[in-house]
Length: 231
Image (cartoon, rainbow, N blue to C red):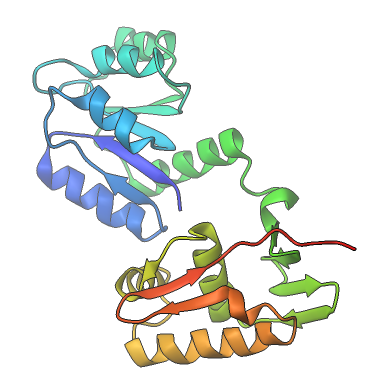
């Protein structure tokens, strides 16, 4: 899940953008104190920044300069200002795109997809394939391969496994898992989550991997990581 820092002081627009991006599983964060934009950025470490030009205290250009002293994270300006000098200035400061308000949400989302795909190359074979506990997971084909064989998972099972591995060695709460699955329009039932995790663990047992999906009573689940030993 990509983290996006949305630096926008219009509460209504912020809420609408956050809701739209959540439908694409983007994790959107805002600014509580517009005098501490840089501090928020450093703590959050977002994958992309969307920033308005007209902001309280200091404008978007100022914060773009500050962010650029610390990071090359992709930056998109979102502004009602349409003077060519604003667009030129944003590009000179190192922004990746400039979107003028009002805008169509499909355009915003398409641009975000394109920038993240270009910068992080998340659609490559490297991201489709992942290793975990000596096994190779093909997220495109829903197959887990190990020296002892391979298994095929359902879409729900591969999604759960992916979510747990992305947060390996960290407890993922049941609430967070259900919310994530809800945003992905899969299922929300607490009982259904339990059933799917149990099915996933049972399948992984065929490869002696089920033991690495731990149940944390009263909290959630955790995928542990081990370094495989070779004779």
